[in-house]
Length: 188
Image 1 (cartoon, rainbow, N blue to C red):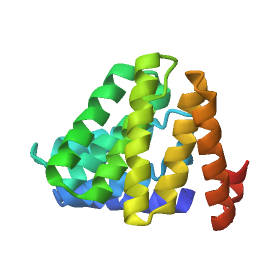
Image 2 (cartoon, rainbow, N blue to C red):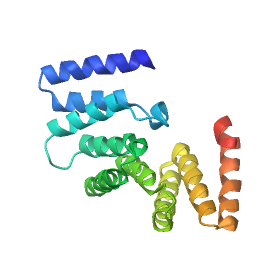
Image 3 (cartoon, rainbow, N blue to C red):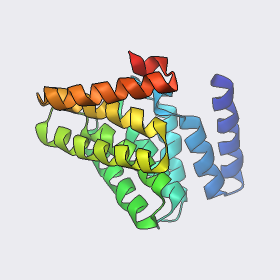
Image 4 (cartoon, one colour):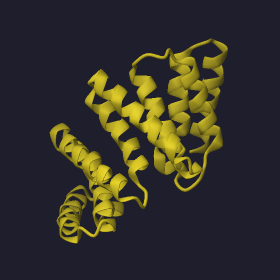
């Protein structure tokens, strides 16, 4: 993982030197990596790189801009900045919907789930709505990764709101899918 981050950091430096905004955005996304890469910690270097990449992209709708906003929102989750997380993820989802690219919409909805994960009933209800949309998208797009991810989030939110029977149904569906896909982590 560290060698990959070094390669993305090098690509980011080259893109900045060459004034290549798209190249910098792609390198920043690669450097930040998937959310599990820095789960539980504030990755200041990734946050700084994502912010620099956003500054250099034109301020208009675009796939890279929506992805950067979403990934920056997720990177800020552990920085305890709920307002910025909500604003960035909301902007990312709105932009992705205008662009109409379902895979980008799904990616930005993931960031919205992070913004909804808090001990607040309204945000948890929004998270259930977002997770439900991702489940439908996962089914329509044939993306098991979206199905397992969204169900996991929805189960947690349902349980926090005391909606145990609904959570039980999702737990059953989630376990069945994880078993079919042989996803050990998701079966836990």
